[in-house]
Amino acid sequence: MSVKDSAHSLFISDLHLSDSRPAISRLFFDFLQQTAIHADALYILGDLFEYWLGDDTLDAPLNQQVCRELRQLADSGVNVYFMHGNRDFLIAERFASACHATLLADPALVNLYGTPTLLMHGDTLCTDDVKYLAFRTQVHDPNWQNQFLAQPLAARISMAQQARAQSESDKQEKSTEIMDVNDDAVREILRQHHYPRLIHGHTHRSAQHTVSLDGRACQRWVLPDWYDNGGYLRCDAHTCQFASLTV
Ligand code: LP5
Ligand code: MN
Image (cartoon, rainbow, N blue to C red; front, side, top):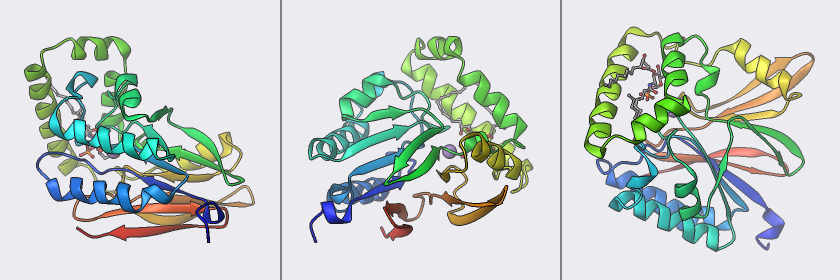
């Protein structure tokens, strides 16, 4: 069977690549070279990096390597798409063009082999997490971002570390329900986009859900994180299925 006969796209998110977990970076590069190379498209739905402090960090060794590997994939004919997560929302056009990737808005509605499919990172569906959403509004403000990006790198690293520490401590106080998607928010976005299939990450609770809504059954696919091992979702014209990758 030729590659075209088995046309498919792959979806990943929440890799949280960082120098502190080199095995996951290696797993990702192997995935790009051995698995993603056979796909029509690779969709990275946010949190590729543990955090991103600005496109002026592109020449850090790990960032450079990730970019080189993505560029090789794109240059071999695979469309590479990138959506922001809550850790790497500062990725901008300079990064995307260096990697030969296309930045996607969140949400993005795509026609996947005839099935309308809504792609999201997933954080905006967690509407019960009021404290997180307030933080998100602040750091998505263009003025805040310009001021942040104008700081020296050492100051940005320090602020990111403080934010991470605060986030970890706040999460101890939040229930698992608060940090999961809100069912009404899911229904609302599905209605707004005329009942597509939904694929998102962020919650790290990989699963396939069926949302019964207004007499229809919408599929919601939640992508796995890449903390201990890795994984991806593969969709073709007929079906979607999860696959896992072992370090
Ligand atoms: O990230 P994760 O998955 O562990 O938790 C998320 C939510 N937390 C966040 C915060 C990020 O982890 C912070 C790191 C981002 C670095 C980006 C670049 C630098 C930006 C610098 C910003 C100052 O996204 C967490 C959710 C959870 O998902 C589940 O959905 O609950 O939300 C929070 O924990 C938010 C907190 O409740 C409130 C925000 C605290 C940040 C305070 C900033 C203090 C910095 C002071 C600097 C002088
Ligand atoms: Mn996330």
